[in-house]
Amino acid sequence: MSSRESAAWARMSDRTDDDHRDSGLAGLRNAILITGGVTFAALGIVLHELGPVDTFWTFDNGGKALVLANLREDVTRTWISYPGRPIDPELRYFPIPFAGDEPYAELRDNRVISSYLSPFLWITLPFAVGLGFSGLVVLPALSGGLAVVLTGLLAARLRVFSPDSRAVALGAAAVVAFASPLLFYSSVFWEHTPVVALAAGSALMLVVRDGERPLAAGLLLGAASLLREEALLLLAATGLALLFGRRSPSVILRFAGGGAVGVAALAIVNRITSGTWLGVHVSVNRPGFLGSAGDAADGLLLGTGFSGVSVGWVIGLLGVLAVNRLWPGRLLFTTARRVAAVAGLTAVSVAAVIRFPGSEDQALALIQSNSALVFLPWALVLPFFAGRPSDDRSVFLATIVIAFVGLFLVFVPSRSISGVHPGPRMLLPVLPILAAFAAKRWREGDGPLLLPLLLIGFAWNVRSLEILHAKRQVMGNVAAALADDPRRVVVTNLFWLPTELSPLWSEKQFHLVSGSEDLARLAARAAASGEREITVATVAGQVPRRPDRTVRDARFPAFSVDLHVQRVARKAPLFDLPAAPRRHQTGP
Image 1: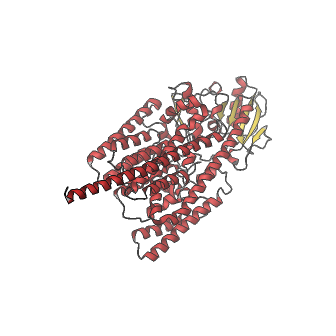
Image 2: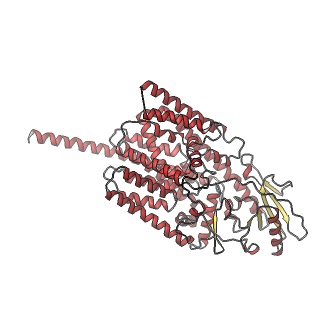
Image 3: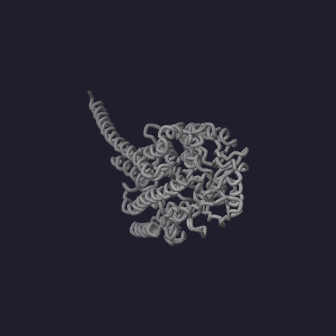
């Protein structure tokens, strides 16, 4: 054997040894990630089960459960049955708003079609049939665990040629699991975590080591668009990133073809279930064109919560980081400016944590406190950290995030995107990419700057889970009080109450009124139908009359309820029922 052949065999032997070693490390990494993902999913299920049965976090979750309950009775029923129709045949007092500034349904052919009608509910249906209330969280929890695993694998692709790729992978998984609200959304009946998992899988398909799989990536985002419309923006953003990255026409066309399958399926499902190609959800949350970009930027990115600091200061601090990134200058001054700016942003975020919820209801206070600056400050500063020369994978993934946020601000619905939810949930589809970048930047030397920001994310994670559990306890007490009430007809001026208590729809006839005149008309109708008494539910303390029963919690005054028994005989006096204060609860 010649010396040249000997050298070739030696190199091949070394490469084989490296491959075996890399394979062994990857196997260990994957085992840790899968174990972590399974544990995370189990934790989501446990948190769901700790709350009272048949209770929900907010209007959105109860609305989905109501549609699901109708599907359990008839899998083809896409409208909401109305037990109160006998005394309200024209649906004037239907207990879900389908008109006005904040509709949550549409009236078609004298039937109410909920904006929460979604393929997600049909996918959940077998779990609900088999496991009841416990089945509602199976898909969100499993998807959350899968998102943790895929985030780790995605991060490993950013450091694929580095010996610390395993540490980056595990670090990214830890960030998305503990420094974000992913666990919250994994323990409630919402379709966000399946979208996060599908988005992470799509990104991974485009940065795999042995060749990209654009068709699979497009199919995954197409499937995500069946669950959440913002996935359509992520589909477009990824397409733009492929174009800017000068990928081959074949790659772009295969990705577009995969995505088109999901878009076509969404249109067909909408047409069949609601009679329109866009669906009810888009109809009641119509996208604008730059009309609400400023409000969206504040609510999604820069809102300062209860910190007392103006957004102008935040923009100034981010401007310092931007100058540092674009014109670094001398190392000493660059470092000093960056540390000072990050310290200032950290102080704002810490103040928002400490001063929360001010004098507000703890749940409603989240409306002012769910921006990236408040909830995910580590994600907000990442674009301003200059790392090592970026590889094509990093540039591609960063382009996806920037394009997605840009498209969202351009086409944001005119309806507010801030609501009773922890963190900027519209950014959840790009959360795996952001967590991967955070772990990468940590390993490249920015750990000391990121650590306090990650701890803030962790603090909000814990706080939001605490609020979730406490509010579900309150709603459980309200549901128990109404369930014990022998009267069948329940009238309320609280738009959220009938939907959040959707499991009681089979027992009670809920009616939504706007004031005393509506109450008088409904009382007369109830009396004509043979009812002697009705129950009127109001926000605690709203009516200057001693309630027959009350459920109050100082942490949640907006969700504390007084129950008043009202006789409906012809000459029975009716108390004055003012209009309830209307506070926006949910975004699109």
